Length: 456
Image (tube, rainbow, N blue to C red):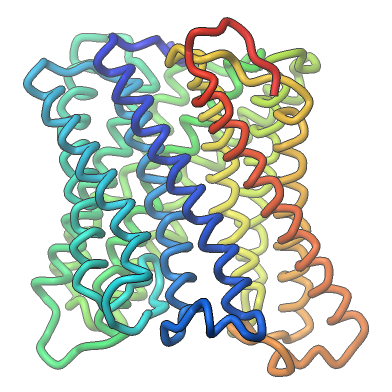
Protein backbone atom coordinates (compact mmCIF):
# COMPACT_ATOMS: atom_id res chain seq x y z
CA UNK A 1 0.00 0.00 0.00
CA UNK A 2 1.54 3.32 -1.13
CA UNK A 3 -1.26 5.86 -1.58
CA UNK A 4 -2.50 8.32 1.03
CA UNK A 5 -5.21 6.93 3.29
CA UNK A 6 -7.53 9.61 4.62
CA UNK A 7 -6.84 9.81 8.38
CA UNK A 8 -9.39 10.11 11.16
CA UNK A 9 -10.82 13.52 11.99
CA UNK A 10 -8.37 14.52 14.73
CA UNK A 11 -5.29 13.56 12.71
CA UNK A 12 -6.75 15.17 9.58
CA UNK A 13 -7.18 18.48 11.41
CA UNK A 14 -3.62 18.34 12.72
CA UNK A 15 -2.28 17.51 9.27
CA UNK A 16 -4.09 20.56 7.88
CA UNK A 17 -2.64 22.78 10.61
CA UNK A 18 0.91 21.61 9.88
CA UNK A 19 0.31 22.21 6.17
CA UNK A 20 -0.92 25.73 6.86
CA UNK A 21 2.11 26.34 9.06
CA UNK A 22 4.36 25.28 6.21
CA UNK A 23 2.63 27.68 3.80
CA UNK A 24 2.91 30.43 6.45
CA UNK A 25 6.67 29.79 6.72
CA UNK A 26 7.09 30.01 2.93
CA UNK A 27 5.01 33.19 2.88
CA UNK A 28 7.19 34.73 5.61
CA UNK A 29 10.30 33.65 3.72
CA UNK A 30 8.98 35.42 0.62
CA UNK A 31 8.22 38.56 2.63
CA UNK A 32 11.76 38.64 3.99
CA UNK A 33 13.11 38.08 0.48
CA UNK A 34 11.34 41.29 -0.54
CA UNK A 35 12.77 43.05 2.52
CA UNK A 36 16.23 41.84 1.46
CA UNK A 37 15.87 43.72 -1.81
CA UNK A 38 14.38 46.82 -0.20
CA UNK A 39 17.11 47.00 2.45
CA UNK A 40 19.72 47.34 -0.34
CA UNK A 41 17.82 50.17 -2.02
CA UNK A 42 19.43 53.66 -1.70
CA UNK A 43 17.69 55.65 1.02
CA UNK A 44 16.30 52.55 2.73
CA UNK A 45 18.04 53.45 6.01
CA UNK A 46 15.03 55.64 6.82
CA UNK A 47 12.83 52.53 6.82
CA UNK A 48 15.41 49.99 8.06
CA UNK A 49 17.34 51.76 10.84
CA UNK A 50 18.61 48.42 12.20
CA UNK A 51 22.30 47.72 11.80
CA UNK A 52 22.99 45.17 9.06
CA UNK A 53 19.31 44.50 8.37
CA UNK A 54 20.21 42.77 5.09
CA UNK A 55 21.92 39.85 6.83
CA UNK A 56 19.28 39.88 9.57
CA UNK A 57 16.53 39.42 6.98
CA UNK A 58 18.65 36.79 5.22
CA UNK A 59 18.91 34.72 8.43
CA UNK A 60 15.14 34.71 8.89
CA UNK A 61 14.54 34.01 5.19
CA UNK A 62 16.81 30.95 5.24
CA UNK A 63 15.41 29.55 8.50
CA UNK A 64 11.81 29.96 7.34
CA UNK A 65 12.31 28.67 3.78
CA UNK A 66 14.41 25.63 4.62
CA UNK A 67 14.25 24.56 8.26
CA UNK A 68 10.70 25.54 9.28
CA UNK A 69 9.01 24.86 5.91
CA UNK A 70 10.60 21.43 5.61
CA UNK A 71 9.84 20.38 9.19
CA UNK A 72 6.28 21.73 9.12
CA UNK A 73 5.58 19.61 6.04
CA UNK A 74 7.20 16.70 7.87
CA UNK A 75 4.65 17.25 10.64
CA UNK A 76 1.86 17.02 8.07
CA UNK A 77 3.24 13.73 6.74
CA UNK A 78 3.46 12.28 10.26
CA UNK A 79 -0.20 13.09 10.86
CA UNK A 80 -1.22 11.54 7.52
CA UNK A 81 0.50 8.21 8.13
CA UNK A 82 -0.55 7.13 11.64
CA UNK A 83 -3.27 7.67 14.25
CA UNK A 84 -2.74 8.28 17.96
CA UNK A 85 -4.58 7.74 21.22
CA UNK A 86 -6.64 10.72 22.49
CA UNK A 87 -4.03 11.69 25.11
CA UNK A 88 -1.31 11.70 22.45
CA UNK A 89 -3.55 13.78 20.22
CA UNK A 90 -3.44 16.46 22.93
CA UNK A 91 0.36 16.27 22.97
CA UNK A 92 0.40 16.74 19.20
CA UNK A 93 -1.86 19.80 19.45
CA UNK A 94 0.48 21.32 22.00
CA UNK A 95 3.44 20.47 19.75
CA UNK A 96 1.77 22.29 16.86
CA UNK A 97 1.07 25.38 18.98
CA UNK A 98 4.68 25.51 20.15
CA UNK A 99 5.85 25.28 16.53
CA UNK A 100 3.37 27.98 15.45
CA UNK A 101 4.46 30.47 18.12
CA UNK A 102 8.08 29.64 17.39
CA UNK A 103 7.62 30.30 13.67
CA UNK A 104 5.98 33.68 14.26
CA UNK A 105 8.54 34.57 16.93
CA UNK A 106 11.52 33.83 14.66
CA UNK A 107 10.10 36.28 12.12
CA UNK A 108 9.37 38.90 14.81
CA UNK A 109 12.90 38.63 16.21
CA UNK A 110 14.24 40.42 13.13
CA UNK A 111 12.69 43.63 14.47
CA UNK A 112 13.18 43.17 18.23
CA UNK A 113 16.34 43.18 20.31
CA UNK A 114 20.00 43.58 19.55
CA UNK A 115 22.50 41.03 18.33
CA UNK A 116 24.42 40.51 15.12
CA UNK A 117 23.34 37.94 12.51
CA UNK A 118 25.66 34.99 11.94
CA UNK A 119 25.59 33.15 8.60
CA UNK A 120 26.76 29.74 9.83
CA UNK A 121 25.74 26.61 7.93
CA UNK A 122 22.35 24.87 8.29
CA UNK A 123 20.72 27.14 10.92
CA UNK A 124 21.97 30.73 10.66
CA UNK A 125 21.18 32.67 13.81
CA UNK A 126 20.47 36.11 15.25
CA UNK A 127 22.37 36.58 18.49
CA UNK A 128 19.25 37.73 20.32
CA UNK A 129 17.50 36.09 23.27
CA UNK A 130 14.08 36.26 21.60
CA UNK A 131 15.40 34.50 18.48
CA UNK A 132 16.85 31.59 20.45
CA UNK A 133 13.73 31.36 22.61
CA UNK A 134 11.43 31.20 19.58
CA UNK A 135 13.70 28.80 17.70
CA UNK A 136 13.71 26.63 20.82
CA UNK A 137 9.89 26.65 20.97
CA UNK A 138 9.74 25.49 17.37
CA UNK A 139 12.33 22.80 18.10
CA UNK A 140 10.38 21.56 21.13
CA UNK A 141 7.22 21.33 19.06
CA UNK A 142 8.88 19.35 16.28
CA UNK A 143 10.63 17.07 18.78
CA UNK A 144 7.38 16.27 20.60
CA UNK A 145 5.59 15.55 17.32
CA UNK A 146 8.50 13.38 16.13
CA UNK A 147 8.49 11.29 19.32
CA UNK A 148 4.72 10.73 19.15
CA UNK A 149 4.94 9.89 15.45
CA UNK A 150 7.81 7.47 16.01
CA UNK A 151 5.66 5.48 18.41
CA UNK A 152 2.49 5.77 16.33
CA UNK A 153 4.08 4.66 13.05
CA UNK A 154 5.93 1.85 14.83
CA UNK A 155 2.59 0.56 16.14
CA UNK A 156 1.05 0.92 12.68
CA UNK A 157 3.80 -1.22 11.15
CA UNK A 158 3.54 -3.74 13.99
CA UNK A 159 -0.09 -4.45 13.20
CA UNK A 160 0.42 -4.47 9.44
CA UNK A 161 2.52 -7.51 8.68
CA UNK A 162 2.74 -6.78 4.95
CA UNK A 163 4.24 -3.37 5.62
CA UNK A 164 2.75 0.03 4.84
CA UNK A 165 5.34 2.02 2.89
CA UNK A 166 4.15 5.52 3.91
CA UNK A 167 4.23 4.50 7.58
CA UNK A 168 7.72 3.06 7.17
CA UNK A 169 8.92 6.22 5.41
CA UNK A 170 7.41 8.38 8.16
CA UNK A 171 9.08 6.18 10.77
CA UNK A 172 12.48 6.66 9.14
CA UNK A 173 11.94 10.44 8.98
CA UNK A 174 11.05 10.47 12.69
CA UNK A 175 14.18 8.49 13.49
CA UNK A 176 16.39 10.90 11.55
CA UNK A 177 14.81 13.98 13.17
CA UNK A 178 15.21 12.55 16.67
CA UNK A 179 18.80 11.54 15.91
CA UNK A 180 19.41 15.09 14.72
CA UNK A 181 18.12 16.45 18.04
CA UNK A 182 20.41 14.02 19.88
CA UNK A 183 23.34 15.23 17.77
CA UNK A 184 22.50 18.84 18.61
CA UNK A 185 22.36 18.18 22.36
CA UNK A 186 25.57 16.12 22.22
CA UNK A 187 27.41 18.89 20.37
CA UNK A 188 26.21 21.42 22.94
CA UNK A 189 27.41 19.25 25.83
CA UNK A 190 30.78 18.59 24.19
CA UNK A 191 31.41 22.22 23.23
CA UNK A 192 34.62 23.37 24.95
CA UNK A 193 34.83 26.70 26.75
CA UNK A 194 36.20 29.55 24.70
CA UNK A 195 34.43 28.71 21.43
CA UNK A 196 32.09 31.55 20.54
CA UNK A 197 30.70 33.58 17.67
CA UNK A 198 30.11 31.99 14.30
CA UNK A 199 32.50 29.09 15.06
CA UNK A 200 30.31 28.07 18.01
CA UNK A 201 27.14 27.74 15.93
CA UNK A 202 28.99 26.21 13.00
CA UNK A 203 30.15 23.33 15.19
CA UNK A 204 26.85 23.20 17.10
CA UNK A 205 24.71 22.64 14.01
CA UNK A 206 27.19 20.75 11.83
CA UNK A 207 26.37 17.20 12.93
CA UNK A 208 22.67 17.89 13.49
CA UNK A 209 22.37 19.61 10.12
CA UNK A 210 23.98 16.74 8.26
CA UNK A 211 21.78 14.23 10.07
CA UNK A 212 18.67 16.22 9.23
CA UNK A 213 19.46 15.87 5.52
CA UNK A 214 18.67 12.15 5.83
CA UNK A 215 15.22 13.08 7.14
CA UNK A 216 14.65 15.36 4.16
CA UNK A 217 15.86 12.69 1.73
CA UNK A 218 13.50 10.05 3.14
CA UNK A 219 10.72 12.66 3.08
CA UNK A 220 11.24 13.48 -0.58
CA UNK A 221 11.25 9.76 -1.43
CA UNK A 222 7.80 9.46 0.12
CA UNK A 223 6.64 12.60 -1.69
CA UNK A 224 7.79 11.15 -5.03
CA UNK A 225 6.04 7.83 -4.40
CA UNK A 226 2.80 9.55 -3.42
CA UNK A 227 2.92 12.01 -6.34
CA UNK A 228 3.62 9.18 -8.77
CA UNK A 229 0.81 6.93 -7.55
CA UNK A 230 -1.76 9.74 -7.36
CA UNK A 231 -0.89 11.14 -10.79
CA UNK A 232 -1.45 7.85 -12.60
CA UNK A 233 2.11 6.44 -12.64
CA UNK A 234 2.45 2.66 -12.23
CA UNK A 235 5.59 2.09 -10.15
CA UNK A 236 7.77 -0.76 -11.44
CA UNK A 237 8.91 -3.60 -9.23
CA UNK A 238 7.52 -5.00 -6.00
CA UNK A 239 6.62 -3.14 -2.81
CA UNK A 240 9.31 -4.97 -0.85
CA UNK A 241 11.98 -3.35 -3.05
CA UNK A 242 10.94 0.08 -1.86
CA UNK A 243 10.49 -1.19 1.69
CA UNK A 244 14.07 -2.42 1.97
CA UNK A 245 15.53 0.57 0.15
CA UNK A 246 13.88 2.89 2.70
CA UNK A 247 15.51 0.88 5.50
CA UNK A 248 18.89 1.02 3.75
CA UNK A 249 18.47 4.77 3.23
CA UNK A 250 18.07 5.50 6.94
CA UNK A 251 20.73 3.06 8.17
CA UNK A 252 23.63 5.60 8.01
CA UNK A 253 22.09 7.79 10.75
CA UNK A 254 22.76 4.97 13.20
CA UNK A 255 26.43 5.90 12.87
CA UNK A 256 25.85 9.42 14.24
CA UNK A 257 26.40 8.48 17.94
CA UNK A 258 29.56 6.60 16.92
CA UNK A 259 30.99 9.75 15.32
CA UNK A 260 30.51 11.68 18.57
CA UNK A 261 32.05 8.81 20.54
CA UNK A 262 35.14 8.72 18.33
CA UNK A 263 35.60 12.45 17.70
CA UNK A 264 35.10 15.62 19.66
CA UNK A 265 32.59 18.09 18.24
CA UNK A 266 35.20 20.79 17.67
CA UNK A 267 37.56 18.86 15.44
CA UNK A 268 38.35 18.47 11.77
CA UNK A 269 37.83 14.72 12.12
CA UNK A 270 34.23 15.21 13.27
CA UNK A 271 33.43 17.62 10.45
CA UNK A 272 34.97 15.28 7.90
CA UNK A 273 33.11 12.26 9.28
CA UNK A 274 29.72 13.96 8.94
CA UNK A 275 30.57 15.22 5.47
CA UNK A 276 31.51 11.70 4.36
CA UNK A 277 28.44 10.23 6.04
CA UNK A 278 26.20 12.37 3.85
CA UNK A 279 28.46 12.04 0.81
CA UNK A 280 28.48 8.23 0.78
CA UNK A 281 25.22 7.45 2.57
CA UNK A 282 22.85 10.14 1.36
CA UNK A 283 22.06 8.52 -1.99
CA UNK A 284 21.71 4.88 -0.96
CA UNK A 285 17.92 4.91 -1.22
CA UNK A 286 16.99 8.04 -3.14
CA UNK A 287 19.07 7.13 -6.22
CA UNK A 288 17.60 3.66 -6.94
CA UNK A 289 14.09 4.71 -5.95
CA UNK A 290 14.42 7.81 -8.11
CA UNK A 291 15.42 5.60 -11.05
CA UNK A 292 12.40 3.36 -10.48
CA UNK A 293 10.06 6.35 -10.32
CA UNK A 294 11.66 7.77 -13.47
CA UNK A 295 11.10 4.46 -15.27
CA UNK A 296 7.47 4.56 -14.19
CA UNK A 297 7.14 8.14 -15.45
CA UNK A 298 8.58 7.26 -18.85
CA UNK A 299 6.14 4.36 -19.20
CA UNK A 300 3.06 6.26 -18.03
CA UNK A 301 0.42 7.95 -20.12
CA UNK A 302 0.15 11.72 -20.33
CA UNK A 303 -1.36 13.28 -17.20
CA UNK A 304 -4.82 14.76 -17.54
CA UNK A 305 -6.87 17.26 -15.53
CA UNK A 306 -6.14 17.16 -11.81
CA UNK A 307 -3.09 14.96 -12.36
CA UNK A 308 -1.18 17.67 -14.25
CA UNK A 309 0.04 19.81 -11.31
CA UNK A 310 1.09 16.66 -9.42
CA UNK A 311 2.93 15.13 -12.38
CA UNK A 312 4.71 18.38 -13.20
CA UNK A 313 5.91 18.97 -9.66
CA UNK A 314 7.18 15.39 -9.60
CA UNK A 315 9.17 15.88 -12.82
CA UNK A 316 10.66 19.19 -11.71
CA UNK A 317 11.44 17.95 -8.20
CA UNK A 318 13.39 14.97 -9.49
CA UNK A 319 15.18 17.01 -12.14
CA UNK A 320 16.27 19.66 -9.64
CA UNK A 321 17.24 17.19 -6.93
CA UNK A 322 19.45 15.06 -9.17
CA UNK A 323 20.86 18.10 -10.98
CA UNK A 324 22.08 19.34 -7.61
CA UNK A 325 23.65 15.96 -6.94
CA UNK A 326 25.34 15.88 -10.34
CA UNK A 327 26.75 19.38 -9.90
CA UNK A 328 28.34 18.26 -6.62
CA UNK A 329 30.68 16.04 -8.63
CA UNK A 330 32.33 19.17 -10.08
CA UNK A 331 32.96 21.02 -6.81
CA UNK A 332 36.56 22.19 -6.62
CA UNK A 333 37.55 25.19 -4.56
CA UNK A 334 35.29 27.83 -3.02
CA UNK A 335 33.24 29.05 -5.97
CA UNK A 336 29.60 29.31 -7.02
CA UNK A 337 29.43 25.63 -7.97
CA UNK A 338 28.87 24.99 -4.24
CA UNK A 339 25.63 27.04 -3.96
CA UNK A 340 24.55 25.63 -7.35
CA UNK A 341 24.80 22.15 -5.83
CA UNK A 342 22.87 22.75 -2.64
CA UNK A 343 20.30 25.05 -4.24
CA UNK A 344 19.50 22.28 -6.70
CA UNK A 345 19.03 19.58 -4.08
CA UNK A 346 17.25 21.78 -1.53
CA UNK A 347 14.88 23.27 -4.09
CA UNK A 348 14.24 19.76 -5.42
CA UNK A 349 12.89 18.91 -1.97
CA UNK A 350 10.88 22.15 -1.87
CA UNK A 351 9.38 21.41 -5.29
CA UNK A 352 8.35 17.93 -4.18
CA UNK A 353 6.78 19.29 -1.01
CA UNK A 354 4.82 21.82 -3.04
CA UNK A 355 3.38 18.93 -5.01
CA UNK A 356 2.68 17.10 -1.77
CA UNK A 357 0.76 20.14 -0.53
CA UNK A 358 -1.36 20.08 -3.70
CA UNK A 359 -1.94 16.36 -3.26
CA UNK A 360 -2.90 16.63 0.41
CA UNK A 361 -5.61 19.28 0.01
CA UNK A 362 -8.41 16.94 -1.22
CA UNK A 363 -7.45 14.41 1.48
CA UNK A 364 -7.93 17.14 4.10
CA UNK A 365 -11.38 18.22 2.93
CA UNK A 366 -10.46 20.92 0.41
CA UNK A 367 -11.10 21.05 -3.33
CA UNK A 368 -8.41 19.63 -5.62
CA UNK A 369 -5.88 22.00 -7.12
CA UNK A 370 -6.49 22.48 -10.82
CA UNK A 371 -6.57 25.16 -13.47
CA UNK A 372 -4.12 27.04 -15.64
CA UNK A 373 -2.23 28.76 -12.83
CA UNK A 374 -1.70 25.52 -10.92
CA UNK A 375 -0.45 23.81 -14.07
CA UNK A 376 2.01 26.62 -14.88
CA UNK A 377 3.35 27.13 -11.36
CA UNK A 378 5.61 24.02 -11.31
CA UNK A 379 7.10 24.96 -14.69
CA UNK A 380 7.75 28.58 -13.70
CA UNK A 381 9.31 27.70 -10.36
CA UNK A 382 11.21 24.67 -11.64
CA UNK A 383 12.59 26.22 -14.85
CA UNK A 384 13.53 29.34 -12.91
CA UNK A 385 15.51 27.30 -10.41
CA UNK A 386 17.20 25.28 -13.17
CA UNK A 387 18.34 28.52 -14.81
CA UNK A 388 19.45 29.81 -11.41
CA UNK A 389 21.65 26.82 -10.57
CA UNK A 390 22.83 26.53 -14.17
CA UNK A 391 24.06 30.12 -14.09
CA UNK A 392 25.75 29.56 -10.74
CA UNK A 393 27.44 26.38 -11.94
CA UNK A 394 28.70 28.02 -15.14
CA UNK A 395 29.97 31.02 -13.17
CA UNK A 396 31.79 28.74 -10.75
CA UNK A 397 33.45 26.93 -13.62
CA UNK A 398 34.80 30.34 -14.70
CA UNK A 399 36.23 30.94 -11.23
CA UNK A 400 33.59 33.25 -9.75
CA UNK A 401 33.84 32.98 -5.97
CA UNK A 402 30.84 32.36 -3.72
CA UNK A 403 29.61 34.91 -1.16
CA UNK A 404 30.76 37.86 -3.25
CA UNK A 405 28.76 40.67 -4.81
CA UNK A 406 29.20 43.63 -7.09
CA UNK A 407 32.70 44.37 -8.38
CA UNK A 408 34.16 41.74 -6.02
CA UNK A 409 32.70 39.02 -8.25
CA UNK A 410 35.23 39.74 -10.96
CA UNK A 411 32.82 39.63 -13.90
CA UNK A 412 35.43 40.69 -16.42
CA UNK A 413 34.33 38.61 -19.40
CA UNK A 414 31.14 38.55 -21.43
CA UNK A 415 30.61 34.85 -20.71
CA UNK A 416 30.82 35.44 -16.94
CA UNK A 417 28.32 38.30 -17.18
CA UNK A 418 25.97 36.17 -19.28
CA UNK A 419 26.16 33.29 -16.78
CA UNK A 420 25.33 35.54 -13.85
CA UNK A 421 22.60 37.17 -15.92
CA UNK A 422 21.00 33.75 -16.50
CA UNK A 423 21.26 33.12 -12.76
CA UNK A 424 19.46 36.41 -12.05
CA UNK A 425 16.67 35.76 -14.56
CA UNK A 426 16.22 32.25 -13.17
CA UNK A 427 16.07 33.57 -9.63
CA UNK A 428 13.38 36.07 -10.61
CA UNK A 429 11.30 33.34 -12.26
CA UNK A 430 11.70 31.15 -9.18
CA UNK A 431 10.49 33.97 -6.92
CA UNK A 432 7.42 34.40 -9.13
CA UNK A 433 6.78 30.64 -9.00
CA UNK A 434 7.09 30.64 -5.21
CA UNK A 435 4.64 33.53 -4.90
CA UNK A 436 2.19 31.70 -7.17
CA UNK A 437 2.36 28.61 -4.94
CA UNK A 438 1.61 30.58 -1.79
CA UNK A 439 -1.19 32.44 -3.57
CA UNK A 440 -2.79 29.21 -4.83
CA UNK A 441 -2.69 27.67 -1.35
CA UNK A 442 -3.98 30.79 0.41
CA UNK A 443 -6.81 31.18 -2.07
CA UNK A 444 -8.00 27.63 -1.44
CA UNK A 445 -7.70 28.05 2.34
CA UNK A 446 -9.72 31.28 2.18
CA UNK A 447 -12.38 29.76 -0.06
CA UNK A 448 -12.83 27.04 2.54
CA UNK A 449 -13.58 23.36 2.40
CA UNK A 450 -17.28 23.54 1.61
CA UNK A 451 -16.93 23.52 -2.17
CA UNK A 452 -16.51 20.53 -4.40
CA UNK A 453 -14.42 22.15 -7.10
CA UNK A 454 -12.10 25.08 -7.55
CA UNK A 455 -10.15 26.45 -10.45
CA UNK A 456 -7.02 28.43 -9.75
